[in-house]
Length: 154
View 1: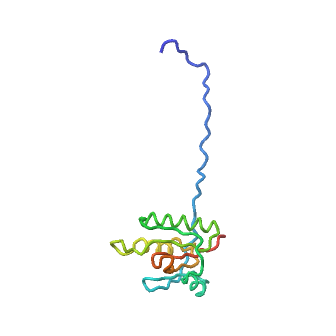
View 2 (view 1 turned 60 degrees about the vertical axis):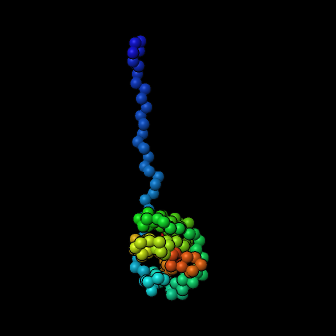
View 3 (view 1 turned 120 degrees about the horizontal axis):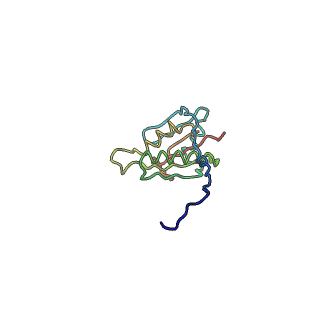
């Protein structure tokens, strides 16, 4: 490069380090033991202090679901992650009851893996968010859907 002269002064700008990520890490409430009733097809569960009358209303579909999550066709791991996100957001928004559609497993080779995965998560790692749950009424999907009453936020 002919005719080029170096700069006399370096004019570099000092770039500060990047700010921490605005993404919040969600901490789930501790797991709680839910009392489970069911006959293999229809089921219900409740946390300590939840009356049988509340569960009966939930089973009968008398508690209106304020939001719905449809997990049809999802893989179990992805569905459980979406379920967790949905329940945390629903609780943050003050929703009291939601409907989770997981399907009956009639098109699956091995029973109902998605339904079982959702129930396992609701009774396990997500149980701290659950006040009560029950199979949906036939009008809302029957054994292919679950009503979930959420615990209030603190």
